[in-house]
Image 1 (cartoon, protein in one colour):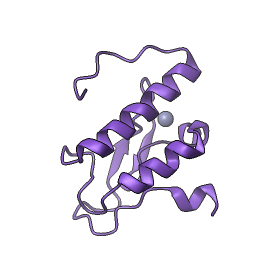
Image 2 (cartoon, rainbow, N blue to C red):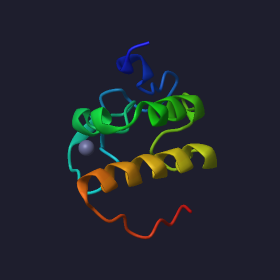
Image 3 (cartoon, rainbow, N blue to C red):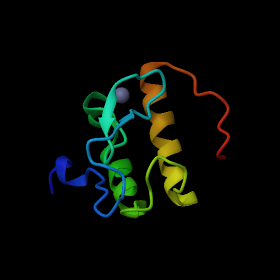
Image 4 (cartoon, rainbow, N blue to C red):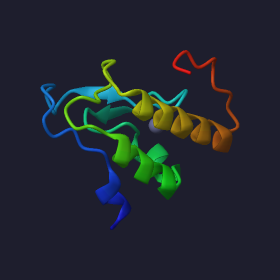
Length: 98
Ligand SMILES: [Zn+2]
């Protein structure tokens, strides 16, 4: 399995695939496609075990970035955001989802 295969996909989402969202990494303003969470640059710095977790917890069609993510999925995203922030020497603001 290549890292590309681990990219979460929203297969049954009702949101248009052309819709663009913001990369979830803090202070990143890059736009990403609706079936992705991170821009190319940030996806590459996420450790493989976290990518695997993301894909495992992801529920196609329900886990969009519009607020209907499962608590498990939110936890993984939080880990990813913190991991990236650590690598970039940034501080994550108080996590309201915790
Ligand atoms: Zn980014």
